[in-house]
Length: 253
Image (cartoon, rainbow, N blue to C red):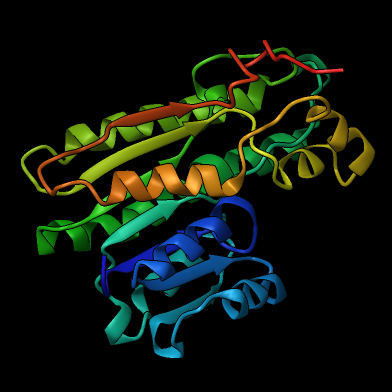
């Protein structure tokens, strides 16, 4: 991992920030991308990493032209991306499909599907030409099991799963690896974002449960990235012990 270039989207918080730490500690060079510039700088400042081993990108993955420009204009020492972690993603609302908010739908589809596709499309050709690389997509248990109110979000994460499988097939015959890491409950800003900043409602999601932490997920991602070059971890589904399915959770009183 020493001096490998790791590109992480959604790096300003949660799983993305945890990935930044674990890969930095292993000696990797980091390209950290996120919309929230101040938060991105805070993450960078928290890392024990030399300034020449980190490159920050203010980037909205939903903007295809911005993604194209960001990748095409990387400084030459940063062009050869070894690992792409497509972590940027979100959920909005828990409405019934026939009562859903169109803006929520657009935001989830644009970020979770199209943003992942844009980064993959612009980064993977370089990996193929260099005969080296690894794409790690952050999916969800929601891509395996649909739950009430999850309709469109679950659809986007099912798409991530299908895209990961399709990319793996398309890369057959190359040494480029593809992994999907699909967590269950992880305590991040996820629920606060889903409920549009309603922190009290977000807290109730994790009441009585010991959920996964961002560090737990980052540890699994790092494991996948550090296997021997002939080993590909296609898919990992991980959940806290207190969770048995997307909807079945043990809550201690």
